[in-house]
Amino acid sequence: MSSPLSIAEQMQVLQSDADVAAFALQHLGLPSDWRDTNEPGNTERCQEAVDRVFTLSRADIEASLATQGLQPEQLPGYRTEPGSRDGTYFITLGKTWEMYFQEREGKWASAVFDDLNEARKLLINVWLPIWLDHLRVPCRTKNGRVIEQL
View 1 (tube, rainbow, N blue to C red):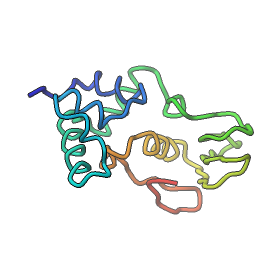
View 2: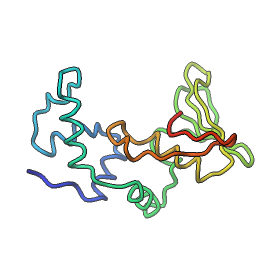
View 3: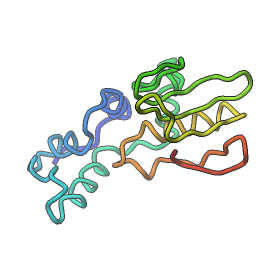
View 4: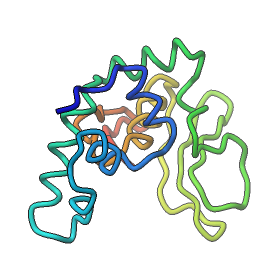
């Protein structure tokens, strides 16, 4: 059987926006049809494959981004300027930061932070694929609410 990827390789896959479950199945030489999670048992098979291939920790993710000179808001999929397009936004508002999802020109979920480090925790949480849920950490919003997702 194939061994786990190096941390650098794991980060490369995550940053490519690849389907980590499909990638893990292929890497381990397991049947690609296991990716159909509508079939009984496949969700568990996919999670097991992901856990075998993606062994990185939250600290590994943060260190890798730092080594690359990237802040979480520079990850694929985040818009840092207000706009009218659908997507995920991370906007600086003076001494606060707002993260929100926008669809059809309207916000449908948002959180405001007065601590940039807390905001960046949420950015990584949202960026992580569902298969790596265990790497999400709590974040404190400006109003003191503790969240892991929007």
